[in-house]
Image (cartoon, rainbow over all chains, first blue to last red; front, side, top):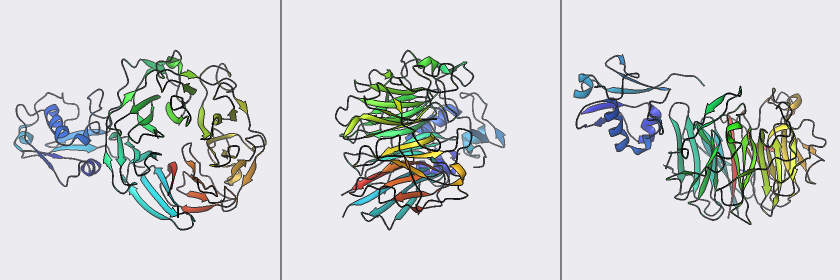
Length: 98
Length: 371
């Protein structure tokens, strides 16, 4: 199972505690992971990716295996450790004050 | 006994303030949607327990929340605000073309008769409608695609459609206002629109009396006299007696006619309220003295209302959607400040009390009068 860790506001919206576990058929890519996440939790549509463009929202980043994956192509394979569930896929909101 | 429910949107969540008809003891619930910007919260006139809220953040975008129980519990509904067709461009601050991009919902206006029918005014300026309780949204693109649309420019706060008024006698007639394009009217339920800015004069734009380009901050009407409109423009307080066909200035003896909100007494169509602000570059009250001004004759002659309001060292602002009235026999007036206070008067403005004073910056205030 793939583990996805969401920032606090999105956990509240999705009404989940802790990591989300997802099972994907086929290639484990950023797009496939987010499609599955949004299918499970429709309230997250538009909160991570722009509803119109489908692109990552500017203040959201993707990390895994101590690597910033934010700028990877959506259909590029995610690291094997994410695909196996050994490492979580982190959805992170940019740090900011105010 | 009647009850009053005050719906407050702030920079960090929504709050609901409740009192009985005496309006002297208030319960505060919230924050709802803690940490999110709540631009507007408004209940359906047809079913007051149906409430809509606009929830957004720079991180995670826009959501619309809906309550069926007066704000006790909420469910997220639709947030797909897709412009109709290829959006094209409007003008950026420097006059260059800029793509139309959805940013947020500034204002939600439920239908007067159908709880499932609600309008949304958004940034970049457009009006959307939902007929299924906010589950899906459709742009009424006749507004944005008006011949002048490509020449609209944002105000400093963004190019927002912030005011939607529905004519109680004729729901086909809708008024909308955009910063900084101006006021518009539809007579066919939002299918087509035309600018209604004749009589407005805006210094600082190339043509001060242009058809569009005016930074209208807020429009208000009395439900029994919907052809009479009151406007707080960037500078100038204005009045129309012909549903926006023409406007005349009614700033009269106001100490400054810059400001954001304007509202009308629930039972006296010629009693109106504004909160003068020093200037467009100093968004706080003159001399640190927070004063609401009331005209009992439809404008031109104004009196300051100060009892209970801070008269020194007060440098808050009152934003455009942050004033509302109740409809009890002695009309209640309410407004919220960027300092987090919500002030209420249960005697039409003669005396004021802070019913809560340490909220996040207040973005909007709406009032429901309940049986």
